[in-house]
Length: 439
Image (cartoon, rainbow, N blue to C red; front, top):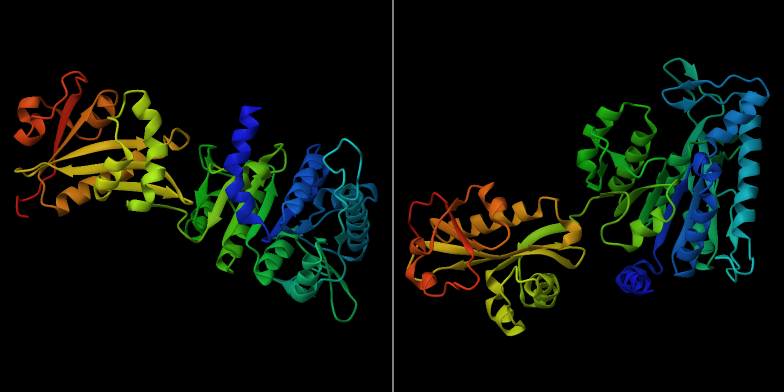
């Protein structure tokens, strides 16, 4: 029970931030077919109940493949796009129609003792996507494969204002009554951009973007995307999701997220925890190193108090922090102070002390300590200091790995040596900064 209460308390800022926001959610056909689909539906219902305006875009690729195979029709692709001739279009319409009905049925459940009880959702779709044919490219006729011409922004917003969930299928209609097969990623991206959505949420098989070593990339900017696309190749699905996320951000969507449809609760973890659960693609700087101000005192206390209780840091009262706040640099992430360090110039010397270096346990091993050390060294050089001292009881090796050498009390300037606490028996290290000595 305490874990649940603690999670809810930490989620409350996000609950308030997401209320009345528009989210476009893209779920591929593989996700609809996955055993975790029921849990994803429950999570979408929860978002709706918390006041999120939801547009759900579904895919249908494996369902189409199944129908083609059953009818003995070969599947044809070019540059990653399905070539939709007339027999294939019949399979597309069949697959999309069945999927749409199945999704609407699942969102209509109202069973006792289930997460759907009392939801009473209204799911609405229709001819909200106008499409145009891709035509002939590189000598290849794509037939009934199309791309989005227009999203009915006013119509969708009117439905969202009425608290409906808008369901968009990977089909579009032309003004002449033709039907076109459209990639669900194209529908989702255009919908997010045209609606001015606050988020585009893309489900994939993987937890998010994986780097060359198979590690999850937590955060990335659109400018970093091309390098990953080159590594992944032109038709890798992970690359298609990443490209869609970047396109949405370049089109004005503040944030795009890639999460796994196979992991239960991945969507909620991504939206309601600071660490997230997938890959975030965002234009703005969501984490930054800056100098502290008086408004950061509460966050600093929350960050360093556990370390003070363990005897790792010297205890500082709120009054001391308020008085010395200009000495601190912090790492801020979405309004939360997750790391800090302080620079104290030592009187009557050209030396300074690096103190109170702390990183939130949830954000260690992310290079934030190095970022702060670099910021403190820059501040020290700007102040004309030549030597940086640090006193530590637990992190000697960390500082030695970063160029600090063992020192002693006799090396400390007199103003600092007189305050040395022999009971703590802190190890002393120093680092030459290479200033010329001019202030």
